[in-house]
Amino acid sequence: MTCGSYKLVGGDAVLGTGATLSKSFSSLSPHLAARITFYFMKIGNWNNNNFIVTLDSTVLLTLPFLATDDTSAYKICSSATYTEALRSIDLYATHSATTMNLLFSTDLTLAAGQSSWGIFDLTVTLILCHSTCKSCSLENDATKCMSCDTGLYLQTSPGPSSCLSTCPDNYYKNDADNLCYSTCPG
View 1: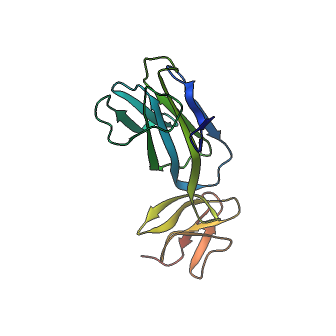
View 2: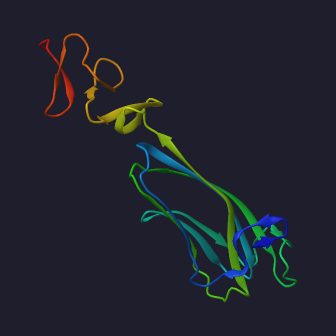
View 3: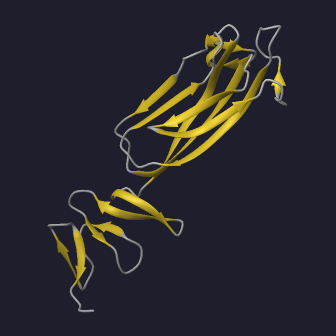
């Protein structure tokens, strides 16, 4: 739907009480986190209601709109009675699952003709692990492999952990746990 010059998913008199938007992703590459950016537009008579963003089962954002305290009110859509508010949303969340479910919802109590909403320009960016990692973590601003793809061995010392096809000198590969172990005592 178009609201002024904005092309929204949802929009004026479209998404109201009980309406949700969702986006699911599957077969995601190994990653540490996700960054979710988009624009949200509040349309109409929101009387102390909230816009809510949920990632999997975790609420990432509860954005309140007060009926009398909205300093960014605009007349963008066609309603002569109500105003709109536009927000740029930028969320960062720890996430490493191979699937992701985003849910956009509200706690609106009025029909869509009085209170509605929409989003646009949704972008999801994954903070990826190194290509050889099966899983990873962030340590000292660098990606650290926690486990490796099949056929690779996790080398945890010396230096940052990495996944290798062969272990370095003075280390042997253990096929049972795919780790490189030191051959030197101590």
